[in-house]
Structures are given as structure tokens and as C-alpha cells.
Length: 238
Image (cartoon, rainbow, N blue to C red):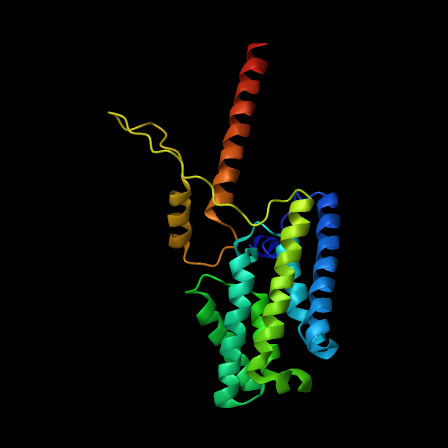
């Protein structure tokens, strides 16, 4: 029993190739540098450097796991917008302090979820907006400008770099699977994106994967299973 519990803490095996790690690492570095540099040109280096933490975290999502639901364009743009507006509202009513920063993180989450723009780095941004450095604090509500400029620059960098390196971004929704209508119920009705979406809702948890990704994975697994089955038949007959 203890061994089984400990095994759950160990990282799962990854099937990502080293070349993909290198591709993502270069993109993370370039995307972060581009975002911070552009922001510094308009608002000064201190303000840009104050945002570098969330931007670096966003870069990991947008370049390393770009197919994830938390890495899509609306996630970063909407997430940054929600976190900043909510945090500035908390500052307006409660001032700047550790308790206000913690309140801002929770409130930002409650704002992002119904708007479907959950983006974990936005949680760090909420903290930074409340616990701002003097240069950022002096901007007041004007801090929205450098935040959104940085987010858009990061998104543009991800759009350009990922697609230039043959990684499709953003993730395009898959076409709905055709519905089979026959006189009798089919033996295998198949799984559609709508089925997977419903199943994800039933799990009642945050899962960084889209129904389209799951459907594509299942289709590929089914094809591999069919090829394996055919190979086993020929091997047995031979």
C-alpha cells in the first residue's frame, strides 16, 4: 500500500522528443524577451521587469504545451485582463497588502472560470498587481496598458514561432463527427467531441486538455489497435 501511494507521486513517463524540448525552450526564451522588450520601450524597464514572472510562466504554456486548453489565445488575453481588473478593484477597496493580494488571486479565479479564460500565470499577475513596485503602482489603472501589451506580444510571438516551427497554434476545433442513423443501433457508435466534452464536465475537475485533443488521441489509438490486430492475425496464420 505505501509503495502504491508513493508511486503516484512519481512523474509519469513523457513521450516528447528532445527536439521538441529544444524547440519549445528557444520559443520560451524568444517570446519572453520580445514581450518584455516591447513593454520596456513604452513603459520603462522597471515596469516590464515587474511582469516578467507571469510572462515567463505563460511562455511555458504557449510554447511547450500549446495544444492545452489553458494555453489558447483567449486564455492568456482574457486571463490577464481578468486578473488585472480584479486586482485593481481589490486595491481600490482594500489597499495594497498580503491579505489583499491573496484575496485578488481567489477573486481572479472566480472571474476567469465563468469567462472560460483560466490561465494559471494570471494568478501570479494578480499578486504582482496588488504588490506592485513603485513604478507600476504609480500607473494606477493605467497598469492595464503594459499588462495587455505584454500579453498580446507574447501571443503574437507564440502564433508566429509555433506555426513557423510546424506546430499548429491556436488549436483548431475539430469538425463534429457525423451521426450514423440506421434502422438498428450500431454495435459501436463511436465517440464524438460532444461525448468527450460531456465526459469532461462529469469529471468536475480542471483538466488541461480539449475534447478535440482527446478525440484525436482516441482515433489514433483505434487505428494503432486495428493495425496491431491485423498484424497479429497475419502472424498467427503464418
